[in-house]
Length: 515
Image (cartoon, rainbow, N blue to C red; front, side, top):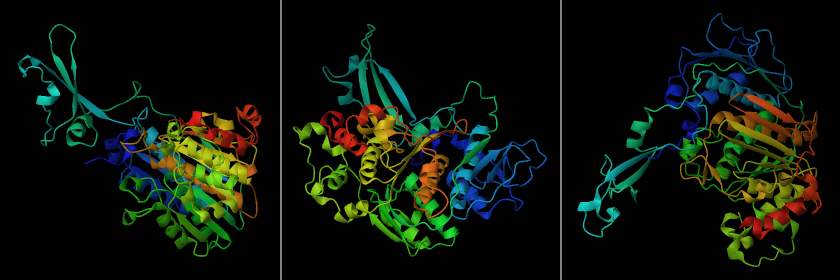
């Protein structure tokens, strides 16, 4: 049976399953924070009554013990992770409290993972074993290749594919090499006995001291948003928005949410890091399930689902409403158009979705590759609306705010932002495999949701008050923030080729970049 949880590429799964964590709550932390801590514990698979680590909520006192601990506190406008026993919590707005609690919970659990030695020292996207059989083929039928007359068979009787190579050492021997992937009984029986650790494994990680601050806001959240992708990031972002509005007494009045996701079904591997789905939703389209879940929380909001992928067709439909795809292409076969979302069926793009884009006040990106993010950046730049973007893989992640025409994906990240189109996947068969864990997806999804609240909120702050770029390393549990919203190392070079939407569109449609 194929294993679907990619958490194992980041943590020692056996140690994680044995980990015992106690939550200290003397009523000095909000109930929202306690619930967020419990929710992530369930997705990580942690339980136990005795403890190897303490998470102290709010202003709860730290017990007299040698057990390592961290304190997680929600501030007026941010989150604190600290070992300072004298630090004190604040009073966030009801609108922001759920999202801040999610961020605080993610950071607290990250402290647990890294300081208990559960976190691996590096990411391990794939694990497999290789079996080599050196044979003397001299007694095989004349002129027959080993692969024609021999099989390598596993414990269950199934044939294991192999390749053969001749040894150039005068023996005439041939080596048969078979690769056995994680998720099979044979591979797991061996891999379960092998542990990857740092050569300094006895060195304890120092406690993280974190204060992540965001602009405080409260008021009515109204307007229209287009959300591209409701997977790991998008589901947590919309959970943050919906729970924040409900927590402040709102019902979604005046809010239009357009959820766009091409996944036709929720899968088992989604459940350990995507908050809007349960086992009852397996096999159903993500956009439709997430729309129903948000509507349950915000019954008055207009929530629409599109089982679709925002792509170049939609960008061209916005920029050239009288004729789709004005750019001439000399050789469509060389463009590998199968990799461009929506490019192969422009006649089928949704007029309703184009109308929704034309009226949107913000674009939120939860997509899985840089090229798709660049398409969204071009769309938001053309519309003159902000784009909220994030990406998380393993124990690293980043968050971006792009305001109007100040900068764009290619100005900030270079041409790789339009050429990296292969979907990144947490599954074994992904083109660009990586490990995924709920601490990073919850953290950055909640940041996106809080930023969207600021973008649509009637009072307090706006996105211009946010950092333009936030980078996180989970191995040290630390942040690096950039404040300049015009930030982009490649900005001047690309602005000479037109506005952000223009030079993005030029690069996105450029056959040489796509090929």
